[in-house]
Length: 244
Image (cartoon, rainbow, N blue to C red; front, top):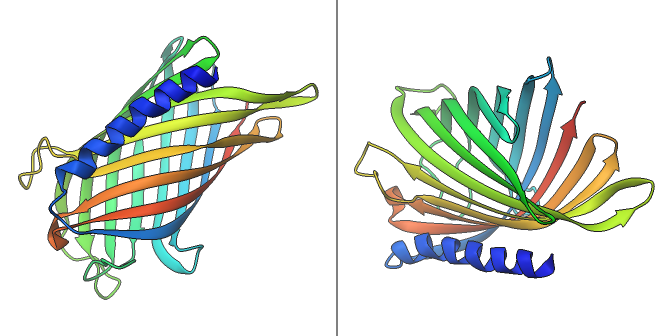
C-alpha cells in the first residue's frame, strides 16, 4: 500500500514540476493561504444526486480575503464507476497577496464533467475531466462591468486508501491529488497550463456520512498580466458530507 502511494506521489510530483519549469523566466512569489471547503452530496433517486461545493478562501491563516466560490450541480451515475455531472459556479475574487489584481473580479461559470472511479489493490483512484465556460468581469466599485468569455479544461486524479482502521468507525484515509487547469481557444492560451494543484492529506471520519479532509496544497498559478508566477502554500480543510 505504502509503495503504491509512494510511486503515485513521485508521478504526481513529476506532473507538478512541468508547469513550474514552463514559466521559469518569470519571478515567483511564495505565500500562505487557507481554504475552508464544504462538499455535500444528497441523492434524489437511485442514480441522481444533488451536489454542492462551497469554498471560503483566505490568505495567510485567514486574515485576508481571497475568494468565495459556490458551485451547485447535479450528478448522474451512468454505469458502475462512471458518473456525469453539470452545474453552475459563482466566484467573487478579491485583490489578494503580493501580486493583486487591479480590482475585484466577479465570475459566472457553467461546467460539465465526467468522473471515472476504479481500484488498484487497496488504492481507490478517481479521474475527473471537467470543462468550464467562464464569464469574468472586473468590479472596481463592487458592480461588475462588461463580462469577457473564456473556456477552460481541467483534469484531476485522486488516489486514496485506508491508513488506519477502527472497529466502530470508518477508516482514516490517506490521499494524494493532482489537478491541471488549461485555458482553451482564447487569448493565445490554448495548450498552455496556467494552474497546477498538487495536494496530500488525511481524511478523518467524523460520523456516518461525514469526513474532514485535512491537507496541504501546492498551488502554482501563472499570472500573464503580471509576467509572474505565484505559489500558494495552502492549508485545506474540506468537510465532506454524503447522504445515503
